[in-house]
Image (cartoon, rainbow, N blue to C red; front, top):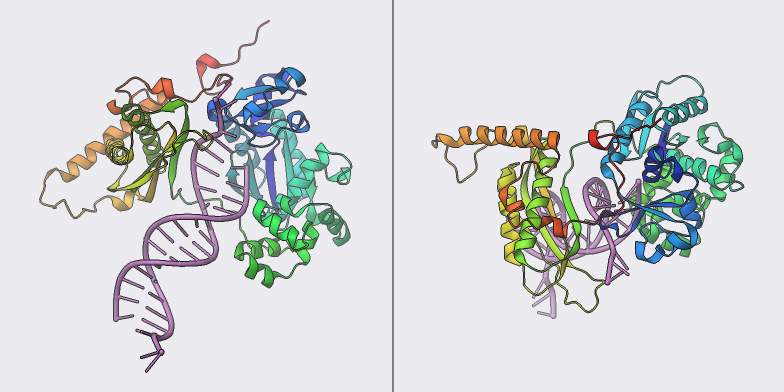
Length: 440
DNA sequence: TCTGGGGTCCTAGGACCC
DNA sequence: TCTGGGGTCCTAGGACCC
């Protein structure tokens, strides 16, 4: 049996832990640049705020309905997440951390009533971290996901499902008839792996509910869609195709991209921005002990600014596999210089590291352009590694940017283009100076 | 005025090989 | 007029996830 544990409205719930006055009120958390709603409390959902909806479209609800908007505080959410994950991990021999707010548990070998275990997990996480969770249990990961959806919906919208499955829902304990009933009440788009496009095509073919999908012909689905959907259907029927992955491979690409606080037109400003993004991805790269063989850079104008001329170039720069911030910045900037054109309002940029390999493997390899007879090769490599380790340690301790390559700050303009975060809450759990203070 | 950021996997099609 | 066939590798693009 598998469980899927997830935090209800994660970002909003994290904010509420430290500001209980937000409880019961409509709250949204905004994306970088305070652009769009990326998390909504149940009250905000009831007001009709949609996922990823632009803030300016719902802003009027601030006055008319008391909607509260906060800037995303990822440092806080990341820390709360790791506390929650640590607690959840105690309940099963294997855990897969699937996203910032969800994990799968594999109950193989676990004895006892899984519903009781699920309820205990919920209680403990709530008491120790303040975060409300839902738990779905089923014989496959896809069914556990679906059970989680049912647990959450039953809690939020009474009457949709039997009240007994609210908060913790265990499909493995149900009769076929009970399960069919739930699947009949659930839209096919709620299934993990069935997105907007697939939903539209399935509906067109008369497949509207989860039960319809379970009864559909797999081989024709495979032909019309893909093996992905075929697996999904098999999983819904109880045949496990996906295992809990408790030792995920390192990422195959690492990206940093962001929209600017205001459009940038000058190469100098873009150079500074892109250099900053390159430092960030380089740090992430070293954190997973990888090296990159290529750097992809893009800049883009805004398709929403209809009257602006559009230009959205991208380029991939090859490098000798490295994790050296200086090399990666240099490659990114060279790429930028090659594709930049004056006269455009660029609103967003990004740097992506691809062609990743393991650091250990790349060590000792010489590239075509270096000969083994050069005495300095190993010394240089060693010196670079030590320098980067020192930079990472300093930035870890004093905050990202404490030590930086000069090109990231040369113009001193980065702040001007930085994303707006006008409503960010304190980083209560990760910065001493921002800790919550209790007053008598 | 204002429209997220970070990932994965699959597939189709082209280049290239013998 | 007739214009191989089977294989691999790579890339771009699409769909999905949170």
